[in-house]
Length: 481
Image (spheres, rainbow, N blue to C red):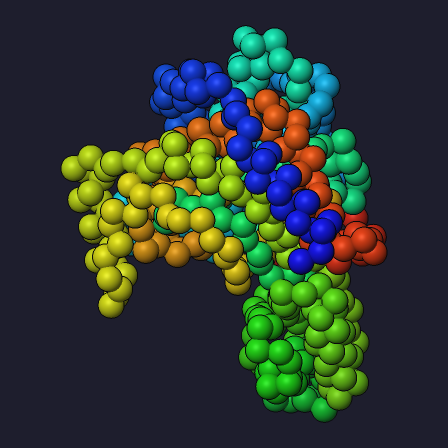
């Protein structure tokens, strides 16, 4: 081990041994959140009911901005040309701590707050990833830290980032590209889940595109020779990509959905569209795989006599872990602890678990905090771009019945109940206490920054994987462009 690395590790250990924010202050902040938990829960359930899709979260964003304005924050809206993106700030001076807040729902999945499958016929979307809890839990944490700053007369700034369209829209990437995080020392975030963890975590870099084929319509029986099927273009591309799967690294992920395949079998479709995602842990490797996938689109168009256009929809870097911050966040999560379900919540959870065919019951995880370890995730998030820009740490709390997967009706159901609200409160407390530690110990930001620079490497230059395109504000709207 080189002497420089030894000194850095020794300094990291010494920094972590310094006093944290005063224990009485932390208890006061947790009490503050407990006393207002009902109001924050009602706020989250309002956003659960709105279930607005990416870049269309007008009511959800407005409700959070109104709440923060009334709490004394200064609001900057329309960040990076995104109407629903905002930054709420309070305080002055260093360190500056950012907290991320998401609030977009997912399309094509709907569910009531019941433990059995129950589609809401008047809704085509739902919070299957729990972003209603994410947005409100982060807002609650920011407000609690603001109260602490105000009462203690400490210097420091807390910023709540309202970040739209995480689900395939890469809202944070446009905010990063615009420089919204350039003055921030540390960023904290969380995500709903089925257990309580605060691990330094990696993820997959991700890129997506809508591939649109244009052909010539004709009667499919009377004059098929006059037609050029756009759907043939889509199917030819998909066939080639499925052969390509054998010849990419095993850690890659490629998936697609045909969003438009024509309207009637007896009409040769003159328009068809397929929506692709490609993922890999390394951004540079992802770029190479992406180029190969997109080449199949051009080959498919050539072979079917159609025209093709490709619109890159989003691109996310992987998460860059920061163990310095993760250790502090884990210590605070351990202090907060999990939560206990009451009898009605247990009955709800047991009914939900009965829908998990063949899976062992994991009830009880909501009461535990799992040990700290480096975690390699297979998902993707635009938090990744933030983490390559500023030292970042995250956590997850049990807002769902243990054993629930994200993007499921079971996640929507639990997220609309007191189970979701209890998990959200765990996250709000942990974020608030961690922000207090960062503000109370400026040395912590310096140590986290050293680790951040070591992990990125001295030659790293940030580049948005989605290029210079404008935010796709209508990406959740269907039909022809």
